[in-house]
Image 1 (cartoon, helix red, strand yellow):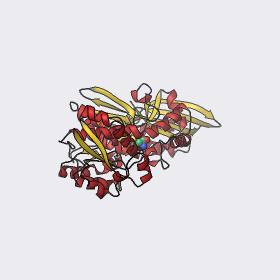
Image 2 (spheres, helix red, strand yellow):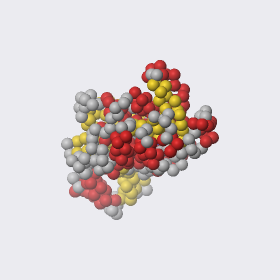
Image 3 (cartoon, helix red, strand yellow):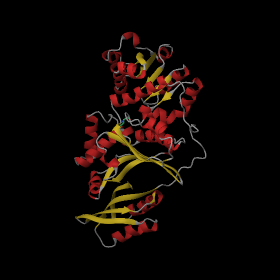
Image 4 (cartoon, helix red, strand yellow):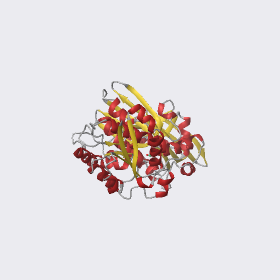
Length: 426
Ligand code: HSE
């Protein structure tokens, strides 16, 4: 039986889950995979936490050097998160000839080329299934299940915290603040929720996923990002009446004009399969030219779901001696010949509070018309004390034109407030 030694760097939620799976399913791994996997070492500042998980004192390392020089360790699992000390630790592990498995999306999205270079130099593996969409095996699907396809698009709910918040704003009518507070209480959102609610977490994931999907490096800087902090529950409610569900989507498209990558709140039709992905669940929808549509659904976070992705990488690494690296030019900036769409198109939903006076609608329509924006629907949804609420939806138009039109419209004396401007994806 092949013996495999694992070290775990960080015993937080995901590290704990990984340890639990590796110890509880040890016999299964022996029986099914012929692998005797043992956690030989952990690196964790909080010694009590390690002891409470049942890890013996002699397996608690006091430094990364101790982990790296342990001859029984074959695979180092990094589940600390953030850039440092993770980057230093992962680099040291690779340099000392250990295969690395990481769940760290920020580290991976930003430093994939640099880390891969080290891995290649040492002929070791670098695995990252757990970096995107937790327990959902999207990385291996892209690497091993879609080779027959040219992928046209990848769209997903790839952040559970924001999906929980938007679901509750829709189903319970909670405000953003109320939903965030509840998400924090349940442990979905961090005390500082910026990475999730401002879309950074989803941006890192989309950068990794679209690089694999479109076989070219898509750096974090190429991804347009907008979070959910400006979303008003009124817009979710109006959208619902119009047949739309609001989601924070990661959208990657491979178009004739180039690659388009963006993360932003998006209205989708209620019958879109992504519309029924609720609470903290994640899902990724792919379109390939051979297979057509595929959707993967599951838990994008949590101890055991993310641990499941990590352990699948550990097993994969242990069973393979030839590791594959990116099949594209994996440099920081990517291949020069790769074209990115500079100005994407979308439909838009816009809600305005305006003075209830004659000629206002004509001025607003004029600003859209002058910027080549064709209107799809216009409703006056309420009038209260001389203030009218107007909702406009547009046909497909350029983002840059919407920006110009909205600058003009918000500067009109008759326009009191632009309440919401949300993209619609069909
Ligand atoms: N914080 C992330 C989420 C999970 O809410 O989906 C880890 O990426």
